[in-house]
Image 1 (cartoon, helix red, strand yellow):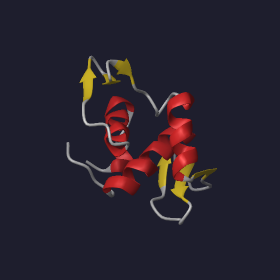
Image 2: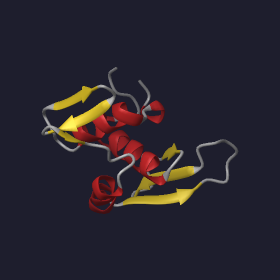
Image 3: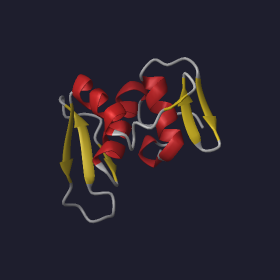
Length: 104
């Protein structure tokens, strides 16, 4: 699956994997890490520290389309878009760790 298409609990699952978490569970459309909800793609208290630690830059794209938030690594690589800054940043992080595609 293309990282640019990841969203919701599937995006959160791959962010956990990128973060080095071994046991990640998706139950009833919720991603759980250590039996706790893990939603870095919508929760700034979870996604924000990843953005800061990894040096992910956020911005807005002037390109046509509904996903106008962009994120990229300090190096300028691994550019990803999203409906929100957190979605774009978490896609960027997964792309940085695993490449443009992940297994389904």
